[in-house]
Image 1 (cartoon, rainbow, N blue to C red):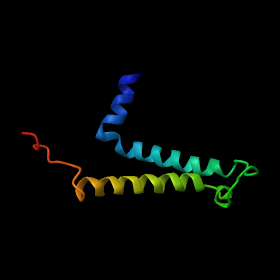
Image 2 (image 1 turned 30 degrees about the horizontal axis):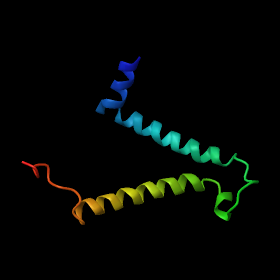
Image 3 (image 1 turned 180 degrees about the horizontal axis):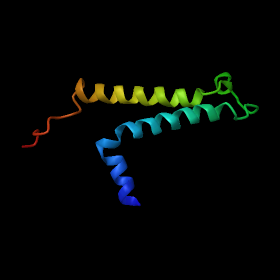
Image 4 (image 1 turned 90 degrees about the vertical axis):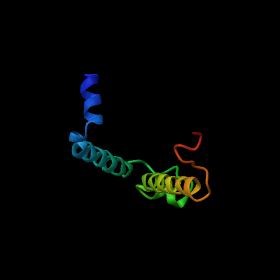
Length: 84
């Protein structure tokens, strides 16, 4: 069982099914957020369905771009043969 699972996630042959499953899970998370009770929301944006999914996605994208900027432009990342 674990061998099939590793083969599914590691093989390039299954890239399209993996991507479809990933998108399906993302859509299901956003759709499930429409069924959550919003009675105890403290802020206005907490009442918007799908807000937490969008906020999390945008936060991850910003985190990736900031880390790439710090690594390449500021000089935190070194070449592979830096210590050779």
